[in-house]
Length: 190
Image (cartoon, rainbow, N blue to C red; front, side):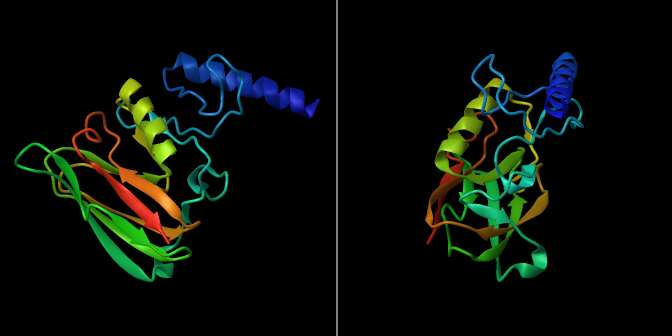
């Protein structure tokens, strides 16, 4: 009975979310399917859609292979990442590549030195591509995950992260057109 009640409440909540225009598709569900519902943040920034789905620690589902959020006082070092546009129209991160040790806790100090809004999102390459496709369909979607940060011109922010399994990952700006403009790079965990 409890499972049926929970399923009913989930269905009612999904219908209400769709009605107010803030519903985001479930990454795990087939189109039109009934995949596991994910945690969502429906507060919005001036009507922008928020994305809290996925399987990362920020959405309450545990750590991913790239790692997990950490407390600032646990950071062994700080790495500064700048985001900006170049005079020839490209969009770049500086440094263009990131390298960390498995288990290392790092404070990423991220600055938007450009004149446009930019994002810093780090994840497995397939997850980056999935979110990039979603952003193309819903350009107002704003990431609110522990592995992502969106900054306006002149703004700064931080992500403190303990890197997980060794492997090749990616960091990128997923605002439509920015990835294609050059705003992505490799992130290696050794």
